[in-house]
Length: 352
Image (cartoon, rainbow, N blue to C red):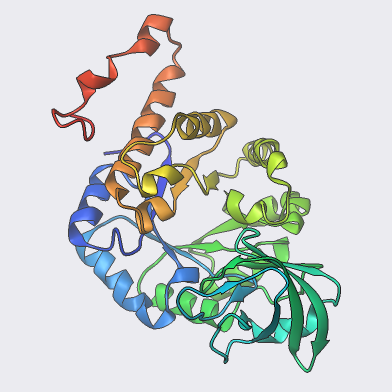
């Protein structure tokens, strides 16, 4: 089944099984995405071969990218406002007083007096001192801290384009016939060129726009890349959230003008991680994103860890077809369609 736009489904515990892979393929999924931020490199080859065994859908490897993250934290770690904590290299195990940071060498670049945000401002720290590669900080906003959560420091430390994990993952993927790679936190066209030196000229490179520098250097990136992906989640760590909708429209417009395919990710159907149906706001967001000119949509948590991965993909496929049909023009009566209950099973659980 071919969809009018590209649909990328991120795989994870909820979808890495024969039944769900088959159903997602039948729905017209364009690519299966493996997010290296949540995948151990030692598991990558096994995962790729498992997908290839049960599906013909091409695979896209999403690199971890040059981003600060928390290391491994103990279960249920929380910090309270006013507490003092230390930021340390990854070799340490995290608890309520010690927070490991990856990559550890970046801690030395964090400036005393600056703010550090963890996991979408779930926790905010003020850096008091930086000594011998560790930092002492005061908790300004308390909360829970999980493993591998994004960390944002202002000003941001300068990091290499790829981690050793990214390079190894790319080589493993190439050896297993993967032909698409998403470059996380792409901030300049030179980063695209660096990845292409690793992959060779054949594979497709998708540059992820998820930082202020990525937006500022967008025109140069568009000249070097094959596709771009707007990650609204990570972008909102560096851009005020009320500016994201208009920024999305502007980026899509630039990509369309340059004739470079553009995908949009993050929170498309977030409520369907736990619910069988999306909110009306989410449905509006998806349709408006398609109207903006997006060439593809990316499901993340919805299909990776959600309770209803197939229903989420099916909803995106339905919305894509509704949008495509509307391009021919509709009368109001056409838009009304069938009553909601007429298209549901007897148990009300989903489309008939």
